Length: 430
Image (cartoon, rainbow, N blue to C red; front, side, top):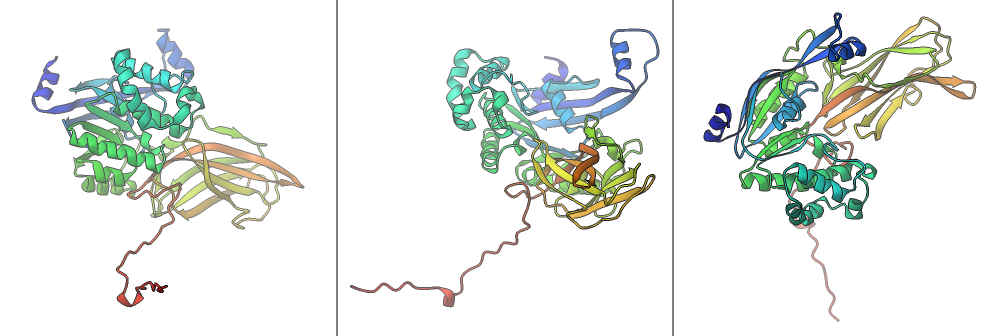
């Protein structure tokens, strides 16, 4: 045991993070990465990306701690370093206690194995004997509650079944420290309630919980303290309400972001792109209700999706479209200029159009992908001039998530019934 681990143990610290930095090299050309890996001569071109910039945090034994921040703030990176999935470029991490982590959907699972086989695989990786896993198996299967699917290869599972089994394993291996990164947003609302009830049991048992979530209502309800990260740095640590209020200020631009960081960081470099080439989507981004470019939108506020399109051909009444998917690939909502009856004119080569879709954000808190398209009709034939699938990543931040994909913005009232409105049933005697 080194000095830091000894000190952490004596001070009742479950996780001690000291001046941790994580630096990635971003190469202009994949060949440059290969050349450097092989030790070949020549100058390689790359930029340094600081995912974490000297982060320090102490998490006490028995605490439930939340980590919040915008996309790219380093939340998942710090969790991966704490659990040993990633090594820090600089700094130290000391952990006192057995960790169970649910970081990414499917992490640690073999897609070809069935559910039972994956339970034993994960248990063995955590250091349990086959006999010990035998004893834990009934509790795991009861919590997961996926029926006979447990005997099927996990590659056939829905995302909901996947997270049920993964979380059931994570909480039933008797961890002293439980770390969860957004995974619970995949399960249905009843399973989420079941998981959060388990959080409460863990808190009563004195276990340490660290979790990342965009569901601010859960952060507020379950956390003792919250760390607010932004672009690899800790902006603050404190009570949930204080940090959530600070987070909202970050989202509306009250905290100035470094100039070298662009909102286009949330553009997907692996997007699917195709079309006839008669139109080209030059730019796309989101602005909040104050007109500030952003990659995060607070639920209940207005926001605008923008796209700039250049045409290379004369076209009759092109159709501009955008749609939202969740990260599991389910198409949730979308619209286009034909549906909205917003643009029915012809265009000509060289013409550029700025297109905007303004609406109120009613989706639940979480991660979403936006797709864009420019299409139209050539006679009776439908043509795609340019389409970008899953082009932009946006985070919806919410302090109240209802059931399902979107919030109906319900106003609810419960009051005592007036005495005169009460109906006394009349029973006629025989």
